[in-house]
Image 1 (cartoon, rainbow, N blue to C red):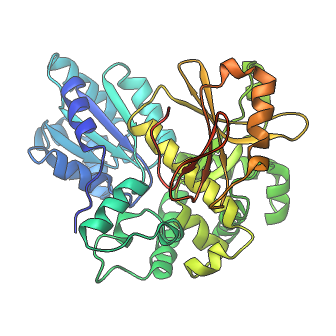
Image 2 (cartoon, rainbow, N blue to C red; image 1 turned 45 degrees about the horizontal axis):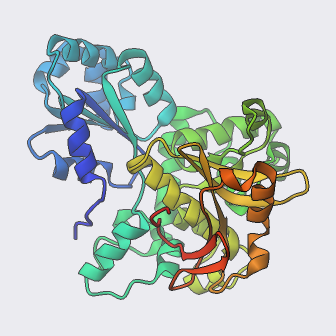
Length: 396
């Protein structure tokens, strides 16, 4: 069963405006599927196959003649030198758009090549697993009453939901995903002496989901040095497994010197790495609030990447320990969002929001929300609204 992705129309528009479109995101989130459905008239070639990557690297003109535009080139990071050929082909057909549609699952190598060769010629779109809205619509279309708790535990990888009658077992699927990811991507990005240590590092990161990042503590728990922990964390970011939410301060210098918070790009993978074999086990655990916060952050990261790229996302904490889990910055106004795994949050749950208003002044705060599990929105106090938040909501 095909699950309709909400960004399809946006991709069509970008392909009409740019000669190159680049879709970046983790493996298995549906990059190839959405492009083949959205651009059925484009040819397709996957550079994940070693022979094609080698051909693009060593015989680029011959490869281009065999795969002329308009074409979708999958996992383009395996042929980094081919970007120069793409640039030449685009420049030779100046004024034509939608010539090359590229995908990649490794941000660092891909974005380095894009910035060096395709600056001004490419639109870059981060892509990830199913949003809560996409998943909800697919469940309703299949005649299934959607359960957000099941979705957050199971995760947004389309393969887990594509066929309600024969979807793969969740734990077996993630077992294979982690093994494949470590073997394929990590060996390509980094020479890890002990892959078992790296898997332990991955699980240690999951245990710190929605926490402030402490690299020395993280490295110590796994038995690696702080520089190694930093290097391994950068690999997880580059391969789109982790997301770091930076702190907000009016002074840019302070933004850069404070620690970010760590989130997984998919809550199902985080829950699997934490060892939760059922939805019930997750939601009755001490980690449930952190996973809920991770889920809410993910929905807004998707919204920003897919619909509103000018929207800035931060978190906020003052020296007294008051914190706001998510701070949206829009049109120079701040929109604080506090994440609470509760159906009826109370005034005490808006403590961080009140501290933020006092710190920057109420005129700076456009509106404020407590992202919770209520079925209907209600006001906790003037200017603070509790909102059903398992998916992104319209901002006031």
